[in-house]
Amino acid sequence: MRAEADEVDEAIEAELRLMDPNVRTSRGLARQLLDPEFVEVGASGQRWSYEQMLAELPNMPGNSKEGPRYEPSDMTGVVLAPGCVHLTYETTIGGRRARRSSLWRKRSEETGWQMYYHQATPIPPEAE
Image 1 (cartoon, rainbow, N blue to C red):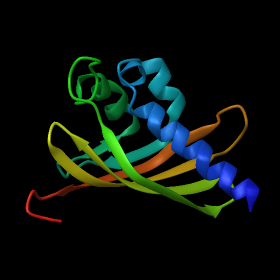
Image 2: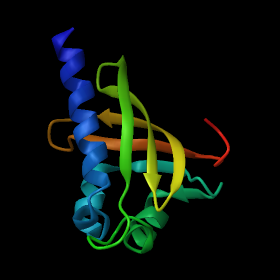
Image 3: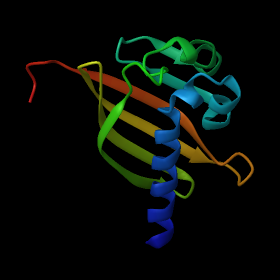
Image 4: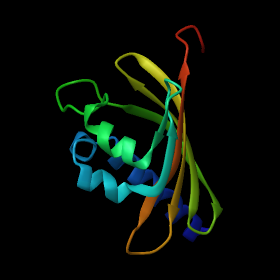
């Protein structure tokens, strides 16, 4: 059980690094955390590939130390298989809330944990 808890903790740490403006504005740092087969379905409904995300990430919200930043809450994870962790949580940024789901995989010690899939679903203001 400890090994599984360690995998979840490592995936959470990687997820939080992706919210760091220093990582979001650095193609090299972001590349380390995104799997080459990465796909995201954003809160806007847009589908993003690995290359699209690396190109656009520096221009997306949450990239300024002075501006609004992602505030995650209720982050939990489960090991689906060795080297595969599913995280769920909520974020708030600039007054907008979203429910998020990420799949992280670790194919080798060299690559470490990389986000394979991410989806964000907006939470309407009237939702509890």
